[in-house]
Image (cartoon, rainbow, N blue to C red; front, side, top):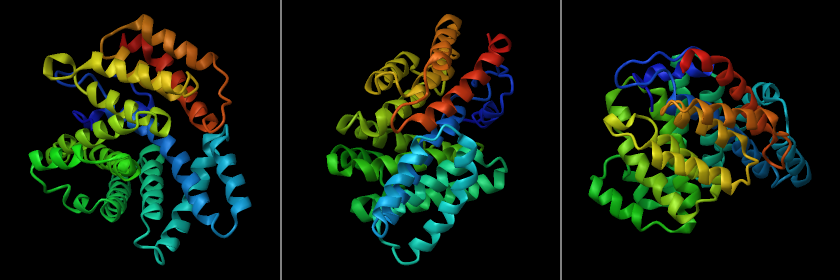
Length: 313
């Protein structure tokens, strides 16, 4: 979800953002999803722990809480491959277990988006994550088996009929699909799939806007700020989504403020808002139940944005 969108991948490595026609620079959806996806690592590892918890519940609960409350992203980065192997093993016996498939999709996609730099490997991880999420969605929502081939009117009709119980499956699929598009941002056909992902995430938001600490609002904010207004972007709507995500988490989910600064403030060249949001991120205690790891990552990203601000604005 980037490219000319594809160029935006570079933002995670802290490179300057030159302007170039349609695209504002190497960032927006790609940069935000790359960093935001680490939140999915937290969710996925917690899910893995819960699955293992069927056998060792006490250890699983402690492990889940330790991951979410860790203040060291490097530990998660180094430890995540062990979960990938464990999930592959568990899937040998639980190939039709939707919860297991979703956990595997989340962890494979998030690990790739956040930590894998080799493009070939990233595409392979994204392919795997999307396939797993699609299989999980197909188990829980039968028509999702054809979600990639349905006509748009039929798709919108079926999406509108989804209920609250469909939120986990739909959200998992939409996030994995977004990661797949991001990994293949140089392929027009892949980027065109945004037209299918967007209504699914919009419906998830309607059904449960607070899901995953306001995650649906974060993704919709990114979708609305991929492009400048002159070519179809709707940054003010995106701004509303970012603000609502911050509100839902009570200001404790610092990645929401980083997204707001990176995707909206930079798009509209609002240096004052950009710097204020990042100061707030850097001055806030990262410790919050279930959010410490994500907040540590948010502060890392905030420092990169502060360092590149003079070159951008």
